[in-house]
Length: 399
Image 1 (cartoon, rainbow, N blue to C red):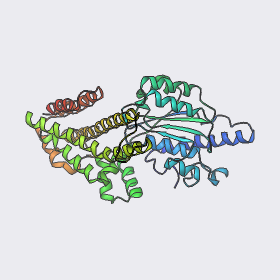
Image 2: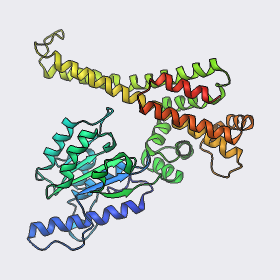
Image 3: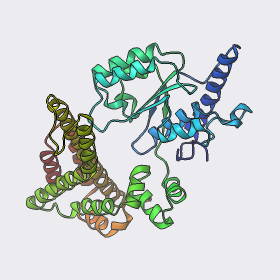
Image 4: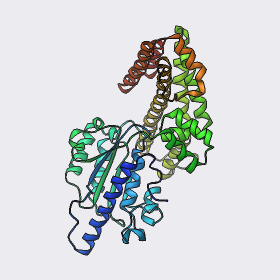
């Protein structure tokens, strides 16, 4: 399989990246041989991948990074870089290539300190590969100061350094940075394409794969989790019951509390094992004595780790809430489709009775106002409004 196999439903993007990888290979070959580089190269030093959640922005960036490091024999014979089995491709995809740095944050932002370290690394020549590649999966989480630090590196890159930035939209990246990048837009893959991917790569039963792909409307990661994780299916079922429980104030407040509790439990389950391992590793690195007693002068390092774990838990809880709000939006979108007599496929066909009940009891205008209320809740969370207050306000607006 080639490096592009996991890039689902993005033929146009794959074609553009493959062409750039071929030109990048020609540039390296010309540099090594001392010959003139090819004219009108499609390769550039900075790329910006945008698209809706689940479209595969990071997957495209990692696949391109692997293709740039490809050393497969077919490449030397004029074939397409990105064979998927050579050492360059393999180590890039699994995250062990010395010249491919993948930056993903489990915190709410990427700060100046981390970005300066990246910029320093970007100035180095490739150690073993053909290019020095920096993949930033969460470029939208750069603080303003960090973005300004990154700008200098993007403006004046080292000769063999490539920046691959990923963000939901152009507006999520500083204008000065995005103007210096080649922009590739990914689209939401079709339900059929996602279902085929789950069947082919994860061995999911066809019916379950189609149901997960339909319920998540083409979001690859969420579809995979829904198809393989019983807890994810249980949480979604709980969220989709909410529209039937908001007929009076008491029900609204109770449903909101349950949504917050479920998000907190998700964050706890996701972080417990990781936090425990990080803490033990840190203690061992700092020379903890038998019984766990820490040497003097290490309290600051342990506090910094605890603060980081707390911030990560906050982001995990926010992500869980966002997923619940996406499911809720999909529910009312289906209700609106039924009310308008639309022939679009319903995402939540498995709860058709609930959809019909809400559709009969309200109007299209009311459904639109409910969708707007969910959007307002998202905006409130982005402004750091207390999650419970934001969700309670939304729940009351869904009545």
